[in-house]
Length: 446
Image 1 (tube, one colour):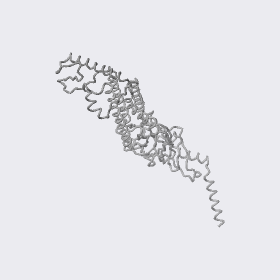
Image 2 (cartoon, helix red, strand yellow; image 1 turned 120 degrees about the vertical axis):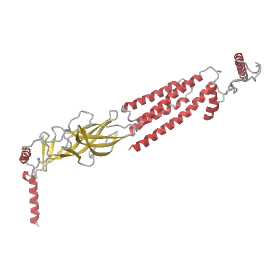
Image 3 (cartoon, rainbow, N blue to C red; image 1 turned 45 degrees about the horizontal axis):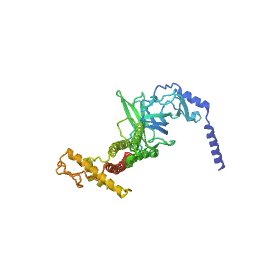
Image 4 (spheres, rainbow, N blue to C red; image 1 turned 90 degrees about the vertical axis):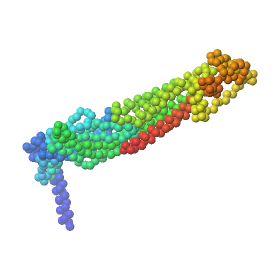
């Protein structure tokens, strides 16, 4: 019993001694494997290089420049049969490290980079070589790659960006690229404040140039925009400004601020549209739903300006000016019924004598107007200036609108009230439709 325990202890101590790194033996390994080694000659007829992408973080996604910046490294594995040794003969040393200029390595590039195209890796990087001849190479980098941005559902959009790795110089018959694992390594990934990494995908393909094919690997990442910031700082202000367009028709004309108010709303919408357009890529492949909504609300504001100008012209006409017949018909037969308009009763604080004086003045004005009509156009019945029940018959237009109960100011108020209700409904429906389309569309896009 005691002998077996002592034997185990002795063997453990011997194992510890053998595992101690010996510089001389390591030098012997370097000398043995590098003798007659030509780094320009590939290890075999077809070298299989396996690659694994490890992502540290997504630095930025520039939707206007349509590019993604990410940091990480790509691990490469291949076997070089010339770099082998027996660990037992060299103090059980299983790994050595060689410089990039000493051994063969594949020439690889990220072919969808938006910067200068260069081969991966630095000459200062070391290669880890195992006694079996397996070589591992881990060149780190910041990858700025092209990413086609779909802004249709901005700011609830999801993008799919990729890093495309291609063999440079070695055709696929000489160097074949394969994925080392079936996923992108995100164990050390740090979250981005604007974008959320949803999933990753791996694929492989080939590139054909002048009749020769080159092996290619694609590392794809699906990311989703974190929309909280944009809801508070983009969508909410746009919706509020759109609603304020409706308030234009509640402002009284006497305030003198009606035109300046709606012009301010129009300019605010134009500025918001400009800000959104500046953040979008200059492409016609995709159209933003948010941009369409802004354009519609901008059109509403423009139409509101035209209506406001017309109603103001109607209100500033001299008292006693007749309302156009078509406008009388429109108001009395349609608009009044739609908005349930009732003319407000005006409480007069004058005395009875003053009221009678006003009635006399009105009758006198009516008589003067009727006299002018008789001078211009013959009538079918004689007119007596002292007759209070005078009525003129228009043969061409038998319907008489001279007794329209609404003057110019009343008609302008009716129009304002009608468009207030109309704009309230339009803005509500447009905003609701925009939110529904944006929500459903972004969900289906995933």
